[in-house]
Length: 231
Image: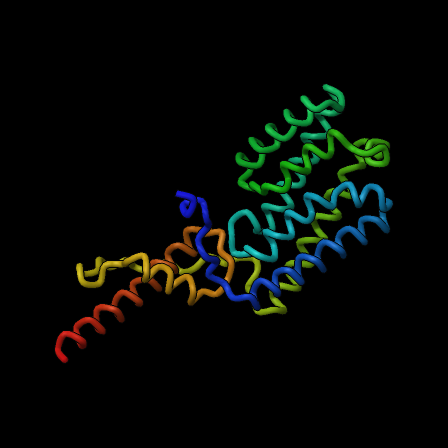
């Protein structure tokens, strides 16, 4: 019973973990440092939580829909505008902070820029530190500067380390029905994930690629079964 609570093994190598970890550390440090130079270290440190969460997406699961450029820029912009508007109208309370987070989520979904760390940003911008509160509507400045810096860091680091970012849609390929002997199994899917050797927040293009890779493993398995039956 307790084994059901354990997560499945990650289909990436330790080298990919290290690559993502180094990128996350460098991207977060650079974003907070630059924001601190422009707007003050107190304001910059107030944003470090959402920035760290964004860094996990942009460096560890950069192929996912939630980690694309419009997601982080649009998500931070939605969260910043909504939270400042709510704080101005309803005040800076726990209830208004939660309301701002919910409204930001709806706006992000409508604008197709869903980015989970922006939910945390909406909460923080309402229940802000004195330095951020003093900026009033100018608080959008550090929000967008830190988001843009994190995005530029991810663009540079991911591509320099041979991870294509942002994600480019794959060309659609025709799906051919496979015979029963070549039906995809869970083992084939695991082999296909191991071949990709990267973190994946699956998009439709990634899923299509995964299915085709699984079909290839299924064909190899079926050929092996035929050859073994003849010997």
